[in-house]
Image (cartoon, rainbow, N blue to C red; front, side, top):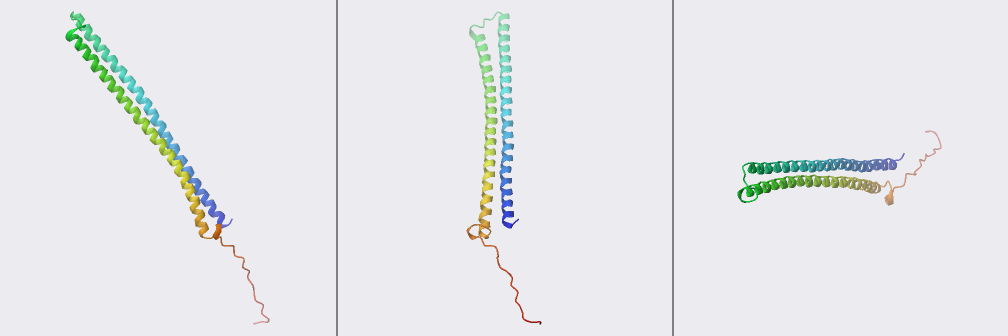
Length: 170
């Protein structure tokens, strides 16, 4: 195996390792992106459960208010009792909306992290290919400058050794 072949093999191994490294990073980033998607799904479920729990709590409170007022023969269809009931329902709706908004914010956050991770993975793979191309081109041009191949190739030495014949003994 000549020096040219050894150098080319080394360049190919180096370039291949850069591509494999980029692919490995992409795989890790894609795994991370999947984890963020799962976190978003969990945030969605937790938000829905918490909002539903809060809504049931408010419905029960409003029902207790109506029952308490009815027990005391207070009409809830007008005046202060109606205002109190409406305020309970309105404040409850605001709390439920805040819970849903907080959940949506977490979902958006995790989705954003997932997209960032996916983009980093793609960039790593592209970087691996670019690094491989750079390694191969740099190696080629350095080899060409050194005269190993290309237009500046120095031919292998074809000199022969000659021995002079002497006519007698010394």
